Length: 148
Image 1: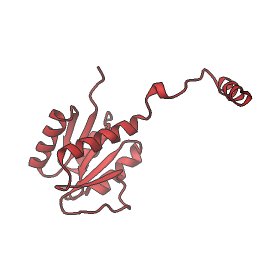
Image 2 (image 1 turned 180 degrees about the vertical axis):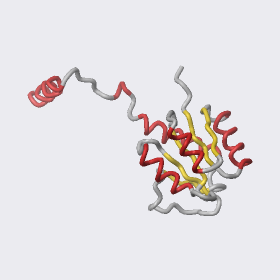
Image 3 (image 1 turned 30 degrees about the horizontal axis):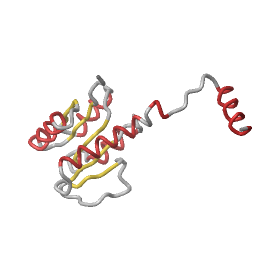
Image 4 (image 1 turned 120 degrees about the horizontal axis):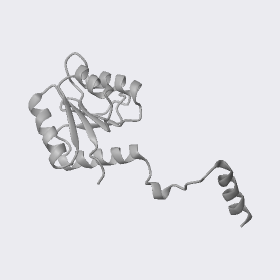
């Protein structure tokens, strides 16, 4: 059995954070680390082990976009999703990998987006990638393919 993927969930609204955490753990099967501020989230993120970040955009002191910018400096490969109830469109100057307006997408759609982004981070399945012992083997395989 594969270990559960870990999602860092960030929102300054405790009730919204608790609901999202419950959804992700029960319906998504994820391990969730919750943070009530961008500063707390960055501390959790630096500890490592995070597979995806899901954060509110509008928060006091440090908004979600600034938090994502700082996290991407540490680990640009980690997928990050911003959500917002007040902002309805995605600004491409944002550093997040995706944007979802609150209320415009169902919990099922959010879980599917998360699943896709975590799968994309993982890359193609191993059985789909050719494995070569050395660089010479790659060249031998290419020469054989061209000669055939």
